[in-house]
Each structure stands twice: as structure tokens, then as C-alpha cells.
Image (cartoon, rainbow, N blue to C red; front, side, top):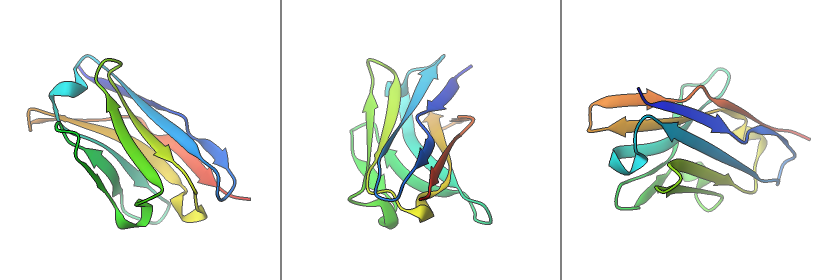
Length: 117
């Protein structure tokens, strides 16, 4: 059974930075068809933030392009989201997602990110 554990969330002022990490156990992120971060804000639907494919290609939602960077460390079995120039509208619970063999879909428990002065 694959387990994903996120960490790194917290309270930060606008313009600040946070680094989210997703540690995977029970499965290799190298085998994943999809590795990504999603977020859920109050009153909104869950939305994709960033994904990274097996070949290293990345995809970002328009509102975070140039500010967020997703990366994967196969040796450490972790997926990281570096978030810079944070804005209040980035406030949400951030979830890590892993899809294996285009069949098994795993989510972490989420980590709260609050951007406020």
C-alpha cells in the first residue's frame, strides 16, 4: 500500500516562500505515470497546481507559473513543490498525488498553506 505524507505547510506573509515535500512509501515514484500537487481552497473545487511526468516534463496552472517549481527526487522518493512570491489567493490545503500504472491513484492527507499578513 502506497502512502504519501506531505510536509512544509504553514503561515507565511504575502511575497514569502514555502517548500512542500511529499514523501512516498510502499511504492516508487519513478514508476508513477503522474506525480503532482493539487489544492483545495474554501468554497472552491480542487484544482491542479503542478505535475511532473516520468520524463521530467512539467505542467503548471497559469496562476502559479513563474512562481512555483515542482521537482522529483527518485533516490529519496519525494516530490517537492517550491512556492515563491506567495499570494493570499494561494491559501489552500495542498495535496500530493501519485498515479501508478495508470490504475492506482493515491493522495496524501494534505498540508495547510495560509498566506496572510
